[in-house]
Length: 467
View (cartoon, rainbow, N blue to C red):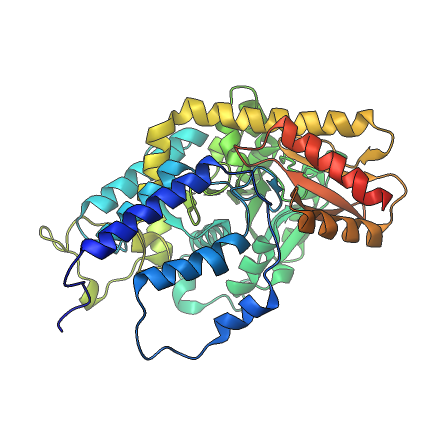
């Protein structure tokens, strides 16, 4: 037998049609079953088998998927999922994933349509936040990598020879709010700068970076012989959704000749909402920006994005001249610059198709309406919490994240209650710490979450608390 294609496609085609019907049946009924349920030990053990030497029929594998995998998924498409800022996906995204897999394009570069699709997605992302249309960028796994690319690009812009000399002795330091996502500190670590080179700035009563404290710390560091090179603002903090004062931070970055990077993993999409866009004024001044289409953009995982204002500085940080990657003036090896010139990945899937199809199918206005509805549902939750003496609202609600607790419950009790809530299948929020106290954190990112979902969650919380 030659190749891996079936000799007769009839059986696989029939199974594929059944798979697609099952996928859309599940999507149409999303919310009828539990958000999440624990995987039984016996099923876990079944995924510890040795490497198979003989193949199995596709039907048998699909049966295994239906019985052992699908019922125990993460649950983020379900309306009751409110944890960890994870988007829900869409039907059009499901189809786009299938189409992208059928092409099996490697989007590291070269001259094919997928590269043009990604370039258009980058232009759309820049337009969404107000950055120049000529900004460069690429799609990555998520904002962890996007923030890393932004920090690497900024450091190479600050010291152009850093790729050759390394960071030893450079004394580069950067700044972010103490509420910044942990991936920012990890990026400093991975970049060889050291996590201590990231100065964590205090926040105000609204959990936004204190811009006066930022200015003072930069002055102190310069006096001590350090080289401040980047300020990282957050548009939608991971704990309570706060937005740093981006205009003030941008002014400081300009005055101090620092690179302005914004982590807008989910919050950047608030620019699509006429009601909430003003909160992000200043984001358009960023030198680089990280965002995730797989969060509020509702694109299936994974689909992160990095934007950089200056394409030359972006390419300076990553582009290579290698004989086996020679760019040509025509033919398949043409169409430079390539996405691999703007990030560390040479092997890259066709992520852009699901982003392109999602934005083109729904349109920016409808996505903006979805963002507004998520924020409205979050306000509904906050108002319900404030109206019930048994609950306490623990942080201001800037966008779509609500942090609350039950009056009188200590950390251990909250931890147990949230785990019980997960296992009930009714809702799946997460937890965080506000003022050192463990609290329930509901992130309304799912376009399927409604006020009825909120009512069901609160009722279940009270029932579990009484137990």
